[in-house]
Amino acid sequence: MPYDIKKDLKQLYAPKNTDWALVDVPAQRFIAIDGRGNPNTAESYKRAVEALYAVAYTLKRSAEQDFVVGPLEGLWWADDMAAFTVRAKDSWQWTMLIAQPDWIDGDAVEEARGTVRRKKKLDADVRFETLAEGRCAQALHVGSYDDEGPLLARLHEDFLATQGLKPTGLHHEVYLGDPRRTEPAKLKTVLRQPVG
Image (tube, rainbow, N blue to C red; front, top):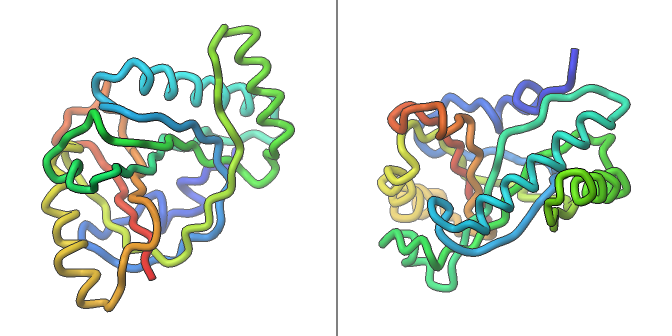
C-alpha cells in the first residue's frame, strides 16, 4: 500500500470540523516554490504550480517506496493584510507546497529538479524545506475560495480572542479538490493559522 499523507495525517488533511478548532501540526517536509500575484491570472503562478507538480511526480517515480503525491498547499501573505479582505489579489504573495514523505531528502529534490529542467524544459525553482507550524487554528471550508471571508473573519474577530491567541505564522491552505474538475460550491479547503 503506498504512503498517503491524507490518510497518515487525517486530522490535518481530512478534518471534519467546519468551524475553528486547535490542532498540533508536526514538522513536515515540503517541496516549495515562491511567487507573487493573482493566482487566477498570473502566468507566474501557473508556471510555478506546473513546476511544483513536475518535481513531485518525478520524485514519486524515482523513489524506492511508493507514495501518493499530496495535495497542493499554499502559504499566503501581503505587505498590507487588508489586501485579502478587499481581494486585491495582484498584491498577494505566496509559497506553494506539496508535502513529502520522510524518506525524500534534499538530494532527491535536487536530482528531480535537474530532471525536470532537462526533460520538461521547466525552470523548476523548487526547493526543499521543513515547515514547523506547531499549534494552529484549523477549519474545513466547503465552497469557493472567494467565499472563505466569513470563516476567516470569525477566526480573527472571535476565535483567537476567546482563546487568548494571536497569529504567529502565515495563513496556510490545503486544497483537497481540483478547481478544474469540481464546481466551486463543492471545493474543500483546509484553512490553517499558526497561533500562540
